[in-house]
Length: 100
Image (cartoon, rainbow, N blue to C red):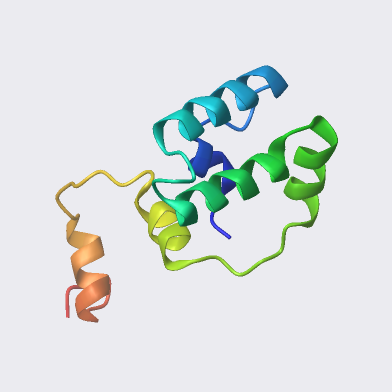
């Protein structure tokens, strides 16, 4: 299962009202008649986060393997392209700190 917070497009500190509002907006944009798979994902995400108790249980006990989307999002979340340092290049190329 992908991250239900991302499926609903909410932050991890959202309250019950914000979660319900996000769910209703998502369902209005994508009703089950249009895309049953997307609606099922929305419903599953909402069920996992609907109440404070459900959110706590999900945050504590959700131990499913991450999907490739989860891994790529986690790896690129804080990425900002920049020029590598000389030490990083030497380390990647297998050179020592003395330049050999």
